[in-house]
Every structure is written in C-alpha cells, then in structure tokens.
Image 1 (cartoon, rainbow, N blue to C red):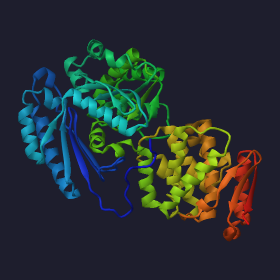
Image 2 (cartoon, one colour):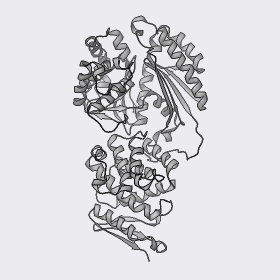
Image 3 (cartoon, rainbow, N blue to C red):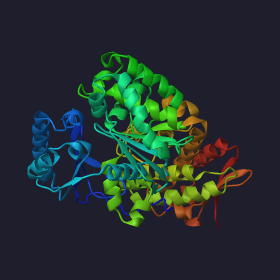
Length: 507
C-alpha cells in the first residue's frame, strides 16, 4: 500500500464543503466536512436529541413531538449548509423512519424541510456503511464492527478493506427500553435471544477486535476513561481489555447513572440509555470473546464519504493524508518533510534492528508533522507540538501511536534525554515506541540545523550508521555547515544507539 496520500491540498485552497445529515432514532446530526478526501476534516458538527425512535416498536408510530423537533432541526441544518456554501448534501435516515408506519409521511416532510432527497437505509446497508467507516478510520482493521443506534444494532465483519455480510437487530437503546418496559433483566433476555441471529458474525470475533460505533458506546467509553483516570481524552482508537470492560459494564448496569463519575459530560437525554448499551456490549463480549474493544469515532457518515472516493484515494493511508495536509498548511517549507522521510528512510535502513511497517508509517507521519510549531516561541515549541498532535483529529492511528508522534516532535525541540519526555505520553507509547520516538527526535535534531527546515538540502547530506559510527557526510561546497552545534547533535544521535558520531566532508 502506498503510504503517501493520493491527493492533498495546499494552504489557501478554497474549501469545497460536503455535508451529511443523519436522521437517527435518537438524534438528528449535521456534520459538514472541508472537502471530499481520504481524511476529511469536520468544519461543523451539531446534533439535536429528538428521540424519534422512542416507543416506535410498541406504538408503531413516530412521536409527534419528536417529529416536530426533528423537522425544526432539519430546517435549521439546511440554512447552516447554505451559510457554509455546501454544494453536496447527503441526508440519511435509519431505523426509526424505517420501522414506523408513519415513516413515509415523516420522510416527505423531512425532504421539504431540508430541501434534499433522503436516503432511507436498510439495516444491511447501514451495516455496510458502518464497516466502511471503520475501514476509513483504522489502519488495516480486523474484527467485527458493531454500530449501536437508538433503534438498532448492526454487526458486520471487516478484514482490511473487505466487508462481510451484516446483520441488523432491534437492540438500540430506545428500542430495548421500549420492548423491555424499562426492565434491564428483560432487556438482557431480549439481547440474548436476538444475538442468536448474529452467530455468523460473533463466531469470527474470538481473538480479534470489536469496533464499537455509536453515541451510547462512546459515552460509556468516556465514563470508562474517567473511572481509570485515563490521561488522553481522544475517543477514536481508545481500546479496552474485555475483562476490564465487563467489570465496568456491570457497574453501569447496577448503578444509578447520576452517580457515575464524570456523568455530567453525558447529555441527560442519553444517560438512561447507558445501561442498555452496557447490556448489549456485555453480551457481545461474553459470546464473541474479542481480544479488545476499540472505540470508533467513524461510522456511517464517514463510510458514505469513503465509498465516494476513487480506488487510489481509498487505498491511501488516512494518517499520512491528514499529516500531509497539516504539513502543507503549517510548515515553513512543506517539501522539507518529504526530504525528511527519504533521509530518515536511508538512515533506518542502515541500522541493524528491524522497523515494522506500522513503525515506518508512524515515522513518516512524524516527519510530516515535525515543523507544526515553528511559529511559536522557542521555549514552547515542544509543548505546542504535543498539544496539536496528541489532541489532533487524526484517524488511522491508535493511542500509543499518537503518543509516539507527539513525543518524537516534542523531543526534536526539547532534547532526547528521557527526563525531557512527558511521563504521560511515555507510558502511553510503551517502551518500544518511546525509544523509536527518541531515535527520530535525535534524527530531527540533526536535520533541522543542517537544512534550516528548507527543502532541497538533505538529499545532498546523507547520514548513515555502521557497526561503530554514525557519519554525516557533507559535500565540499557545504563544509561550513559542519559547526560544533551540528557535530554535537550528530554525537548525541550516536550515543543514543551506542556509536561514535562524526561529520565527514567529501573532497
């Protein structure tokens, strides 16, 4: 797979917004993105909790007040799209509109309110788009995607870019609350009965990843982060071990939601659904026995965008694509990052120890992000690099990888001594990635005073390691670059890997 993006845009390019309105059973949400691309950036995100799916399975109808709120939200969203200059608007409707007898009347009124045709998704189509959303947001996913909405649960197998056959069940939070009459005991029984339909998906889950999609599961993850005092508040890519998750889910089921730590961060309308989401996830863990649970912030909406890309764009790496765009927008000389990638490639190839494919793509992304903070005061460039990277809207990366990126770029500014590193990020990265971050930080500390952050220099100044030395070679016409400062940086890199550091000038 090509690690470099199929397309990118430079700073100053005009936005070409594309927007999606998702009419769900619990909420109606608008997300507008800067453009259609491999790693689109949300420029506006708003949701209204309407509860369209409440009591649909027992009454057969959408509630009139919920319909009124949804139509008002759609009319507002239409105006916002016009304000942002959105030229491509997709409107999707899911389980509530699908299941209600007055669903067709609602969809016609909704079409008038938003001025756009509405795609009513079947359960199978919803599962497919959820899977594509996970494919767009994770690097080489392998497991089962579970999309829990207010009205339904979709399960579908994913292996790389291959989507299996999906199944849909009426196990959304609102649907379970409705069918069980508010009894968690009855809800658990309903979940067990319906999960028999998902045997083909759950039988493949053992030892693989379960990708949790949907607002209720994201809310549970937020509470889990608070309970364990997790230091990073980025939701996408947050992973949990099943045994730890089961214990936490049982606490959620047995507690008053109002007593849960950090529950104030969860909307009041969603809090009653937490226990139902916990019941569903607990059964999936018990039956499927996954290796881990990963929270996905990408789902149906991102899947729809990903589906519209051409083959080359879909094959591009989402992390590299977003890092390349930030490089184009923020670096002094965007071409310098491409030089860095090639320059560090050659150095790493000269080392004895192997670099995995994932470590290679992380190193490439760090090179692209290495000059994000150059406009900041020198004393704060490391700190600002961490703030921008650890909290950035990246996909295609897990939390240890995110910590590696932030560390590598911060250490390039602050120095590579272990005590210079953030203890929080060091713990998140783990020993192997921390040492890889120190190595790249040391390489960057050589590259920038050598090139002044400008493109076109590093290709003429190769750096390589042998069994005994790390040698930077300068062409004769650039001999004056070999200052004491640069030599000290080369020696520092050498010490890091147990070798002498030196500069040689070609004659």
